[in-house]
Amino acid sequence: MRGSNFVSMSEQLFSVTFTLQTDALGVWIAIAGIAASFAVAGATLWMAAKTRELSKNAKKEIEVSNEQASAARDAVTAVTRPWIVIGDGGDSHSGTSLVHRAVQVGFQGNTDWPVNFHVWLKNVGPGLALIDPGKCWVHGYGQLNDRNELRPFTNIFTNTPVVPTGADFEMTGRIMTSSANWSGISVEAFCFPSTPQGGRAEIGAVRLDIAYTDVAGKNLVVASIQVVVSSLDGGGPNHVSCRVHRVDYLNGEPLEQFSTTRVGPPE
Image 1 (cartoon, rainbow, N blue to C red):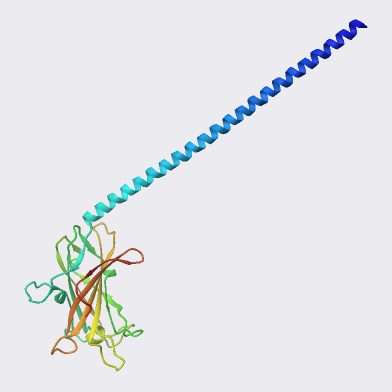
Image 2: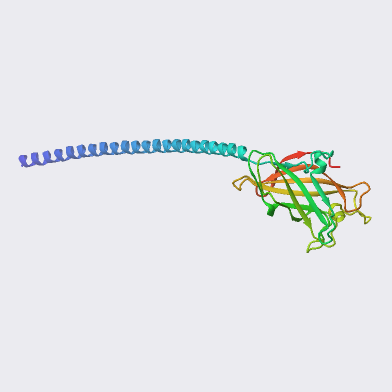
């Protein structure tokens, strides 16, 4: 019995010792697991931080690259961009100022096309100018829906749609007597708004929009020429004097003014 009790007690002590050792091992394993988890979490956070840093650096590099590319495009555009201004009217020795001879509007004896006009222009930019007649318009008064508002009438055309640097060129157009938008148009009705008394204002206006691009067909610019019109002294109603007041330059979609060249007072 004593021997049996001794064996049983030894087994119990061994069992307790084994259990304690096993529990201690489990604790150490658990601690090791927690430590490993913290290490993984720390590594994950470090990797995330490095990823964010790399992402920010990459974004900055992309922004710098885009800025450099944009600057390069702007530099190329600046070197190749045409710039249309009013010309000398084809007669530099006429004795009249440039602003007075750049645009002419008048009657030329054809009752079907009573309004005829010419505008002389010049490309002073460093690149070729491609004229886009489909976007070139002459604006005047006399349309049926609002006779006293400047509205587009017809396109303006040129025989030299490709204009080299420093070259002068001419654009012309004419307006028929009647259409769906106007009736019985004349030089007087086209150039001068009506007054409340039924007459015509002494000072009128005409606007010519000249649309052009660079040699690649891009960077559309519209040179909007604002013209002051008055009757010639001693002349009939179909002969008027035109003076360029200013040139507004527009680009973008929709078109927005980005530059203006003022030539003289509005009257």
